[in-house]
Length: 195
Image: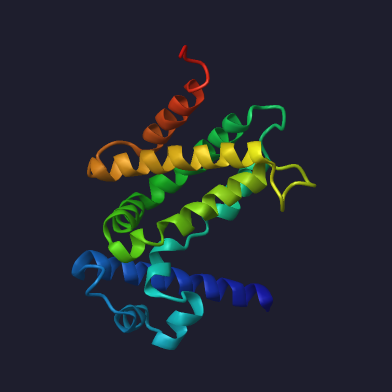
């Protein structure tokens, strides 16, 4: 019974998100109301707020961070930390990109160009950084990551953000996984160049 409830919640969350993105694309973010999103998804506006505290959260919240944390944790512990994050991201991103490219582009564009979303972008980035920190940390350090772990997680988050920004700036014409891979290569090369 609990499993059925979780599947129903997941379907409702997905329906709200799909309706929101369709409306944002057709009418613009600012012009789209919560009531309109709820109506398009076939639920009440009160139901909307059970899933997303604000309209911004439809764009900002995703289910990727827990997945990334587990993928980083599953990488060989002996590998360098940046390589562990890179391998985790490059394991997940191509499949997500293949199935959700248009939604990813719209979501990223909205985050970068809508003032209300841009103001909260740091919160979203912090979620990814925390996922990397937790995935890289040993069992005793998960809740209090070492400084070196935090630095690597922040640098990897910045590399990914730069790749996504370049992708949006180019109108989504480049292949996002390639840009992310290139960003990780640049990050990895930082310590190897002669100053």
